[in-house]
Amino acid sequence: MTDTAIRGRLLLLVPTTSYRIGDFLRAAERLNVDVAVGSDQRGVLAQFSHGRTITVDFKAIDRGVGQIAGFNEHYPLAAIIGVDQETTLLAAAASATLGLRHNPPASVEAAGDKYRFRSRLANSGLPAPWFTLVPLADDPAAQAGQMAYPVVLKPLALSASRGVVRADNPDQFVAAFARIRAILAQTDSQGQAASHILVEDYIPGREVALEGLLDDGHLRVLAIFDKPDPLEGPYFEESLYITPSRLPAPLQADIAKTVGAGVAALGLSEGPVHAELRLNDDGIWLIEIAARSIGGLCSRALEFGAGGRLEDLIIRHALGLPPGIDSAAQAASGVMMIPIPAAGTLRLVSGLDAARAVSGIQDVTISIPLGDVLVPVPDGNRYLGFIFAAGATPMAVEAALRDAHGKLEFKIDAD
Image 1 (cartoon, rainbow, N blue to C red):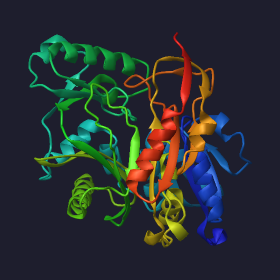
Image 2 (image 1 turned 180 degrees about the vertical axis):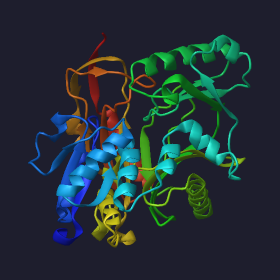
Image 3 (image 1 turned 135 degrees about the horizontal axis):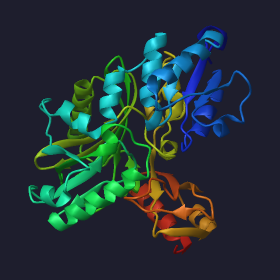
């Protein structure tokens, strides 16, 4: 339990599209932490009482910091957490201004920009692909003739694999370039992220993810996830995450060491990190390191015994409390981000009861309401839903997730 009268209030910065606010609020309630919510949309704040909300500009960082500092004068803050990618930089900048535990804002900014991330790692000694920054105003046909294929084209700042496309030849490069240009035209990306894309060598191999927590630069590994399905392109829609990893212990140690080196190269020092990596005969390759926790509802696949869920650990760390992790309590678990099978309007989801009845399944959640339009990757950035499972072994968890997914049926009207 925390002494909220002494520690002050926790500010959660929550974008409109976040899945995470409910899980963070429940964690704060478990820890008896006084909470305020900051958002860029008043609709997100309507459910909270006066003194528990603040409208914040997420795009103009200096203005947002000023708004948070003004709130702090009346309601002193003990910690600020950026719940999703869109708010991590503002949380770091505001925390630095108020003297709270934080990552260096420049490091958070580098982690959130794929070109800056690659540039920071280029001289780190870690395996790194060839990469280049290409203006969207360039002629893609001229650029296409200069590439050594296969390559991957990426927007600089979008998440959830949105706009990430593999090209194996010049025609595919030109098509991917045009597609990413159209995607960026529909976003509120700013600066270089709105006018350039990253092109880098395609890195073959199996993919894994690491969830960790930084404390004064020291990386504590919370989970290594296997991704059993191959992610070879042309698009990179993620689906299965299974932990603990089935990789040999020495290889898992090398994965943790690689992430630690990447974190150090970026200059990150505090709070959650989520890393994506690829493994092949040439080494362990960092795809990205995010200065935040795992996205969507995927954190619900993790339990830490007396330490609670992932959000509990993040809040504890932000407030300077012991993590209270019970490693022995962590069983095999996993999550499936339900792929969107086709574009169109979602009319019906059937088979939910049968899917939930599969042995080992903990929950099945459909996160897109009926009547909403489904947009598959690489154009979309929402998951259709999530399936959660736990079991005696990672193999049992994977089997349960696949079995449950096979029982779901979706009626989608093409637009």
